[in-house]
Image 1 (cartoon, rainbow, N blue to C red):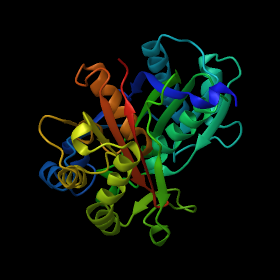
Image 2: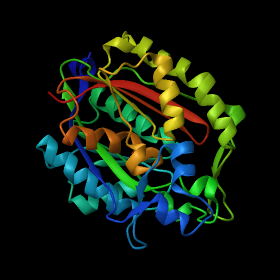
Image 3: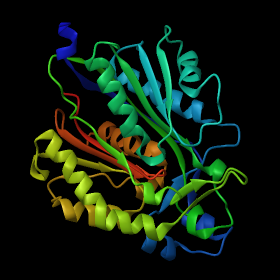
Image 4: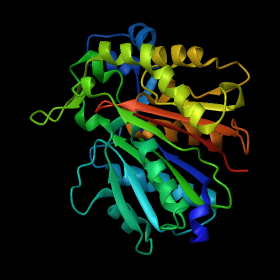
Length: 317
């Protein structure tokens, strides 16, 4: 047997990018019937970043990737995976465009669309490629321009959506440092989160999403821990999809997250950035020095499709 098949992968760099334009709750209140108290009470969001008209998913993905490569101390990879549900590029795909923008030397390039769980899906694919010996280093990126598919007259959704990107670099490791992924879908919730093919606007059945998170998400999250052979007490950082603070907090309680553990709450200042939310919040906290080197981070995404995915990763040492 090829000895490369026995190796694992390791997270060796993190990066992120957010547009300069900050939109506060008061800014939204001037455009739609809402107010800061209403938004904070229901979502926990204080502000979000919105891209300019000319700024693309590829632009944001490339910026986050540059930061991750710099953090990892490398300048090339053999695989690029971009997770996004707001991609405008069909062919060549966004991963190929990111590769060209970064001047990479001919990596494999792949786009993933499982909406808000996309980064975890992409991370699993890259981890498996490196573990199997079919890639040496990989860039995994979550990037979204949700502002481009937002109905800015609908206060139920426009208060949530935002733009940004997060990225990680994976490299080979003698031992696995990323747990087996737990992933799947919920067929009965296929239409719970959609971007309409006619209007190209995002909408969701907020009640059904909330019901699933409050009644089913903890069980799936515990499956992730079981596959990793860990308990909640073994985790240093919990990075859930930043959908809504009122969903994250009950999920954290269900898992027994304590004050001594880090719960990523980037939703408060970044809004919901779909596939970008987990790597964006994780990278921001990492570069602020808030996360322990060599610590364990629990990643869990859920959203359109209706999909979910999660794994435990070891942070760079």
